[in-house]
Image 1 (tube, rainbow over the protein chains, first blue to last red):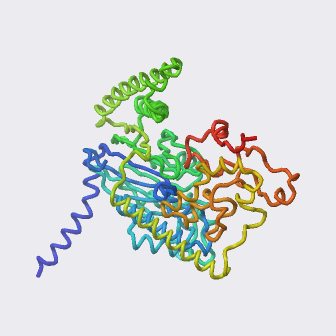
Image 2 (tube, chains in turn green, orange):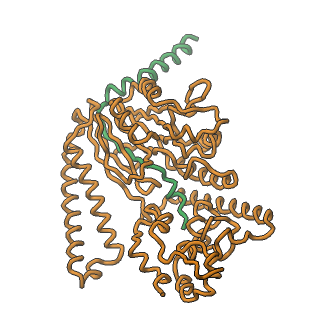
Image 3 (tube, helix red, strand yellow):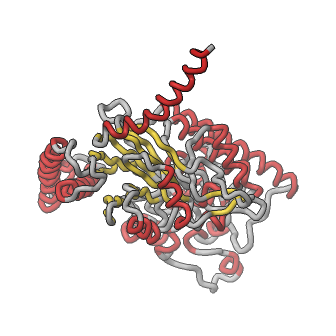
Length: 47
Length: 459
């Protein structure tokens, strides 16, 4: 019975700590931001 | 892009569903069908975050909420809140992983959305001065923070000055500006693309531990990309007319100008490659750097079949709804509406101006409505106004279904009753620019194109 209780608590702790751990480990990285604005015109061309 | 070696984050500033902030009840079914198609395409393209601006509220708040639920578009808004509880009506922010990095995204609808809300909507727009501090507190764990902003440009600058913790602001541009190189204010880069999805912005970010943007090389690179875009656009505009070597064989001046552009393109490309290499080597260093470029979404880019299918399906649905509307209107009117007000239609003009009418009938203006019909868009209220004469209506008389005489020369009733009453002889640029907008006709040149309109030069 105890094991059943401990498991969720451990999991919750791991999940709670993960973002912090990940953030601390990797503060420099590369990515591409693809950005746009009001794409309606191209999705609904007339003729 | 997603298949490349670099993680990708895809965002949109918003304002994608409707053209304006209000729609008429009669046209609402068609407008909503278009909006629904757009949302479906966004779902398919797997956007990471989309802002909400005033235009997205044109069909009412419940419609937008329903669409968000149905299509699972990740709309965010931190300032669009419940009037009673003050709680956000859409997710206020999103904290996600982009590769190794923790990126916080949030969005502001801005003050123009306040006017778009209806009195029955239980919602209000909170001032950004109240919203931003609490949202930044919620995004505390993020390495990099991005704001999708519906605020006016001056307020975005004020935000950038007050909150150096916001690293990027995507401005849902409403100031008529085209693509702009990123502008740095304090520690924030403000990004903007031109409207109507003609271009996508691509910002390669090398994030650094200091969370501060570096300067010099990144800035040089960004300027280099902008200049390259400009030069390539000029080269393409030459090439569109044919092979310049053949085209300009008797015009050495133009040939030389073209060749200089090609040489300039080569030099810029080499310079950009060099700078990119230097920046890539320094990716792990403390300061953050970014290279920006714009990707023109021209007709030469292949369509994604699944998105194309959505566009075609939506087009058909919108047209079918318009057809139903026309039927209802016709039943109501019993017969087709008479020419609205002072318009007489081209056939009446042709009774006296036969030569001009013959020229006009060979023109693209004369086929403007037919091109819509061929694309099954002739009941689309967003398209009709630029393809007919006078106020667009699905029940208008046949001889107003073209861009005909009275579009350029003004209403003809008075002149047809009394020929001494003058008409506009040469249409002013203003009467063309309503439809020949940069979005729809980026090669429009009033003096040049006027000479192509033979009917005004007949006499």
